[in-house]
Length: 259
Ligand code: COA
Image (cartoon, helix red, strand yellow):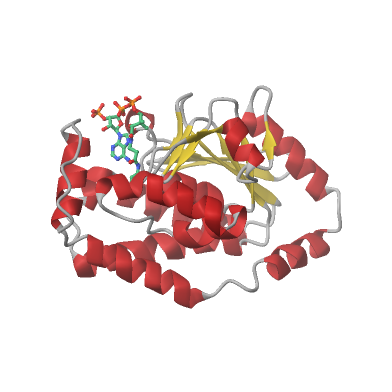
């Protein structure tokens, strides 16, 4: 079975494993509002689809999983719309985390900013040898706004999370595996590796798998996500944000003034 969207390919194999491929390879699968809306739609439909037992999320092409939120669209945000955009992204990614069907990210290249946040909203992460993880938002005068400040700390601990968020540095597959950001490394194809991992899970008691996911995520607090969104919105009205995003689009280094 195969459903198609404008920016997403959804396929389901005979074992009930659905693959959701973010399909905007010419922009390294960057998350514009269309992609975000379609991620929401696809996860709503997967939830209701009894033929689907588990989900793999990956990116089209061989270069990127997802290279982040679409920086061109970010530029139009102000304090209010910035906070709203952050809440919207958080809520869509929450849908993924709230799925009781296991969701595994198959990271096949750049997973930066919103792309890293998307991978972190999945329950588990498998990476190909070319994966690159990073939260470069501070280099744009921003902070991660789709739950990244919360989830990265939970996954790798606060010290490593802060180091990555404050420096914006990129790490490769092996470094990501060492800090626990990646559960396993694929020798060849991360989607096939994710499929193997899912098959192990699907051989277990289905109700127990659902309840285990629910139990693991039960302590997450909504309040901290609201704070992330409010701070993201505040930054959208700064000169640094305008400078950081302009510098990316003009392919030059930003000149931040702290204003
Ligand atoms: N938003 C919008 N467009 C993006 C994008 C993003 N997050 N990431 C990549 N693109 C676009 C580029 O603008 C370029 O478009 P163009 O061909 O029309 O100029 C195209 O995708 C290819 O990217 P390019 O930068 O030319 O590829 P590269 O191999 O030189 O560099 C990256 C790859 C991932 C290092 C670089 O694209 C990058 O730094 N992207 C932004 C990452 C980021 O800051 N994400 C967080 C956003 S909050």
